[in-house]
Image (cartoon, rainbow, N blue to C red; front, top):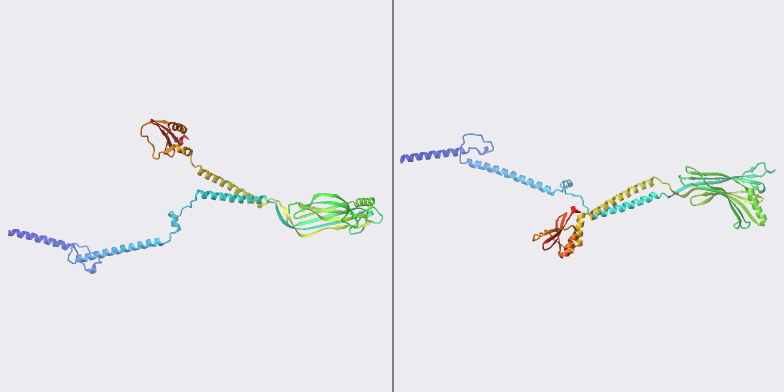
Length: 437
């Protein structure tokens, strides 16, 4: 017994010593100020009761640092998130992530817009066409014009005058006068080139009138000496120079014969007139008046000098502006035609978007609505019956009339529908399929 106790005690003592040695080697002794220094690896470990406290404190300090860093990270993330939320969303970002979408126009808006464009383009095209066709324009043109008449009085053979023709500005003997050479001159200078030609003609007007009242005309005769003739043109200038031989002796003899025959107290003359034929009017621009039935006579001359005058000229020349208006108007009309085609096509696509199958089905459901019942979830006969397929919906109508039963409509899918009339032992069926139309 004593030996056993001794052995047990020794064994217990050895176990306790081993346990102490394990505990002793479990921790290393370090000073508090050396906590930050790296621990050296050593196979020998010394344990004390205070070492666990130091290590636990070191671990606690490390955990606190980690928590502090985590809190700082959480705080910074919250601040960044708040900053991002507070910042205005940039347009580029919104576009990138699909924030902006294309504006969608409804069918009505598109039709109204296209019709408005067609009307506006057509009106502009009409206006331009009118401008292109309206090349008859009145333009104001300034001008200077001059006219003059020079003449020489040519005599019969006589013993009084050595010259055969006398110069202008003299008094002449009527009985010695044979004829008169009159040179009519006219010149007009426009501020710009005009495309309208000018014409002239020359007439001789003989008048016999009451000597006491010149307004009382007893006889008048008009004779055309020069027919209507175009005036020569050079750039902005138009001019004429025409010499007329006036048979004075003939005019004078006719008047003397008239006066002697009727013994009238009258006076007479012959006026040689140069007329200018313009587009809208004919006007006198020069003349000479020759007295008749007198012993002696002098010649009176009527001329014009018009400076800085203004007239309205109708311009009828097709120019670059007319061409531009016509081209732009044609383009706009072409655009209008394209828009009309597109608008018509769009309307037809919307209004006639149904296929032939859909149109046929809609017509049947609309025309025979009172005879048809719709099986929403399909139709299966409770009894097995003989199925009789008919070729047309009209044949199914005949069966319905005979049986006085409703027509059952069932939509199989988008391209197939079934119409049925059920009898006691038969099921009459018409199948409408897009493939059969």
